[in-house]
Image (cartoon, rainbow over all chains, first blue to last red; front, side, top):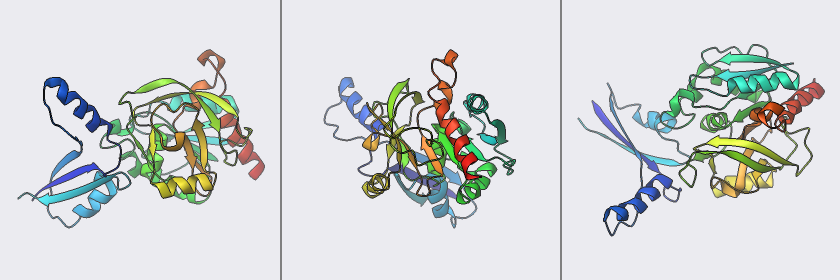
Length: 74
Length: 222
């Protein structure tokens, strides 16, 4: 089965990448962008979803600074 | 006395660390990441670099290497461990130290010398300093912005576990923190590179005292 994991900085954690992009967008003429947050997308093919939660907690995300969510794609 | 230096694929400061350990008067010992044997060392340095290419997050993959499993037991037994730069990141990922290191606030890789204050001499790696000593050391990092939740920061401050503090914060680090230790005080992580200031041809010998400290500490403990 295919799994998609989304990892993003926890709210309140400084996200300098997102902030740099937010400031760059108006320079290209895009107005009205209030916030930008940048995370990470992980797509995996696995035999079972049983251990996805543990994979996220132990390796794919750092729970100190990041939150994650995952879904079964197919 | 034997001081080990872990070597991961992508470590790039291990030779400098081995050199500094030898200059301080100990026998430097390389510890390959795939070996679980610490080769009877008295202390361990986890050096800087880009272990496993910094893939996923700096230090995230290195923490699951064989040598780190052994190092966790070494830490529990009170063995002195110093993580420098990427080594600090590895130790936080391994939960041997609290918090995490985020991207620098300015989004730039920093490569410069910084002035630091020694905040505690009650660690194996700062035992020869005087409290509030000023120290100039090089930094070279992209993720050196120390983060911990407010409760952890309060605890670090209350227990005197901030080891080094920037006088002029270069990266946005919480409470100007450049280095911390664990509750038992044997595991220390710092962003600056003392091994790079361990010979006058490199510009300074100010960093050598970090390695001399652990020698003195282990010497008096035995």
